[in-house]
Amino acid sequence: MSQERNNPTIVIILPRGESYRNFVYTGIIEKLGENTNQHIVAVIPNLDLKTIIEKQAKVKELTNFSFSYFFGLLHEITDLAHNRYMWSAAAQVRWNMRDVEASGFKNRAIRILKKGLALLLAGKVQLKLLDNLSQFFSEREDSVRYWKAYLQQVRPRLVFNTSHSHARNAHAIIYAANALGIKTCTFLFSWDNLTSQGRVVPVYDYYFAWNSEIKTDFHTIYPFIADSKVKVTGTPQFIGHFQTEKHLSIEDLYKKIGLKTNEKYFLYSSGMSHHMPFEPFVVERIADMIHSLGNEYRLVVRTYAKDKKEVFADLKSRRPDIIIPNVDWEKNFQTPLPEDQQFFSSLLRNCIAGINVASTISLELCIFDKPAINVGYNPPGKDIFPYNYTRFYSFDHYKPIVDSGAIHLAQNEEEILHCLKKVLVNPNEKKVQRDQLIQHFFQGQLGEVVSDNFELIFKDILNHA
Image 1 (cartoon, rainbow, N blue to C red):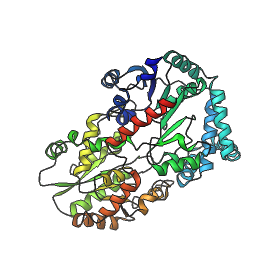
Image 2: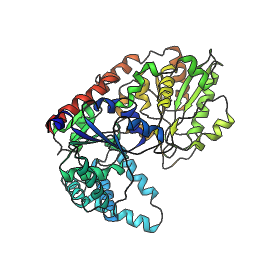
Image 3: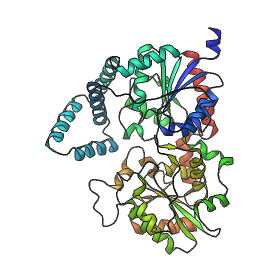
Image 4: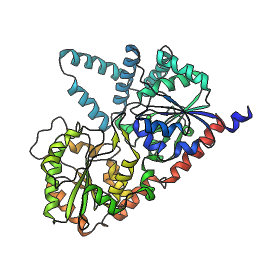
């Protein structure tokens, strides 16, 4: 019993590839392992990554069990009801897009029925009831029984899911832990997830948030969760940006991407092609603007790692002057590799400025004190209905970034060209606003401080578990 107190057993779930970047490459899992007996349940992208985590803990592969039709439907209705309860700008877009995607009479009729039911359930009391029903019915699911048996064998004091979002494969384990009375916690994966994604399910005992504003938003959306159950940790996603010893030298970076020593580059970061159609068209026109500024200026394009390679294939073959390097992610489970983190940090660190459409990368550019230019217009002359680039800037999570004045928002191509010229002449124009945004948004919770936060919070939770 004394050994259990000194080294409590915990189960850490890595349900998606990006969990490796956030918690394995950063050393957080290794640090947590100094005072705990760890078991890792994880997706296995490749043998190299499996070897890395096997050095830190006992590993069990996370396989994707399916839920019954009834239970899946219960989740879907809960998600729809939550979406209507939230009714944020992002939620409205999701609602409307699902309407567009429901093609054919049968699908549209089913969609109408589900929406009607969701409207009846779109309230905090009804959603709390749905959460309770999900936990009750989950115990009839084969996948939950399977993980109950595993947890009864391991007997952990705590189960930690490293990503609440896009991690349905982890739900059964959490439902099982809840049924057994084992404490659970999860990391709220992204700053936009609360208002742009579905309901946080299953229910956890503790939640880890990027900052105090996200914590406040969480309590507003989930009023039944006690204040003490939501902990501000910061995000491990950006720790690699502060590990400068791992970054490429500018000489190695230029050699890797094929730049001459006298050249300088702007960095364009693309988004999801599903949401931003004709983005290569937008990029090509921006590249032409950059070339007009002088022969020494180039455009480097960081393509969205989870997108299909063919999205930018035509542009890459036609325009060798536009540098579009490969993104080193493992295809299995869309997993960033350590060398890609080093490369990406180095790209941000050495660019003149960054360009994107309402991306988290705007925050990362500000971390590196680099000007961020946002594309706030649709591809000229292209019909992209029902999509719209401009809508992202009214989303609840991103509007404060615009309002901060830390980024340049270009509402047409003329303004993009003006911004490009402006950051060349005075890259420090918005430095004060960038510094204020980073201080306000992260509240000093950046770099290795985040690792320390997780260690301290886990000790506190385990002492009370």
